[in-house]
Image 1: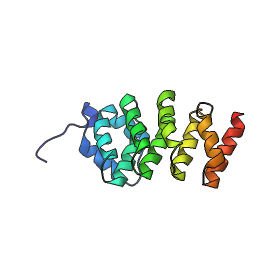
Image 2: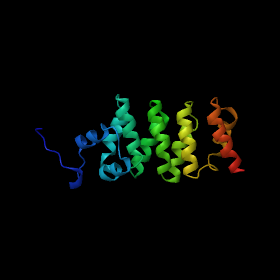
Image 3: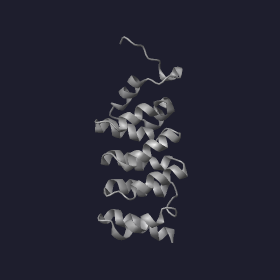
Image 4: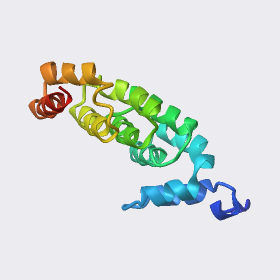
Amino acid sequence: MAQKRKSAASGEFNPDELLAFLRQDELDYPAAGLKFGESALPFLKELVGGSDENLAMKAAYLVGYIEGDAADQILEEAAASGSVPIRVAAAYGAQKRSTGAAEAILKHSLDDSSPSVVKFALQSAKASKLGATLKSKIDKISKSFLDDDIKGVAVDMMKKLK
């Protein structure tokens, strides 16, 4: 390697180290979120929007474990576009965000047509205690979603909200 990059421990973000982490089979996202931190977000945003779907999905999950407005924005954009696995990662990551950011992400995710995305969005809404705030979207899912299992989860959530 002609160019030496500083390690994350020295305060500099190392993209090679992050890529090596994301290429592993079993990932410790919480530890990586702390290790790579906000300085990794511009690179993670590129990966989330990239053509390697597996890498993009893992990058989106990792963004969920990093604090900050930039991470919130990346997850909101991922929830609104991208492949199903990336939208699932965004919906899952919502439960780790502040109330306002989680609500913005889940508004996209609860309107998704993919049962997987909506399933994780409902879980995140419940974990984030945003059921009452997102009640109209959850009610719509409970009445008209095509997947009966997802519809059932939404019905149960509505019963608890009344």
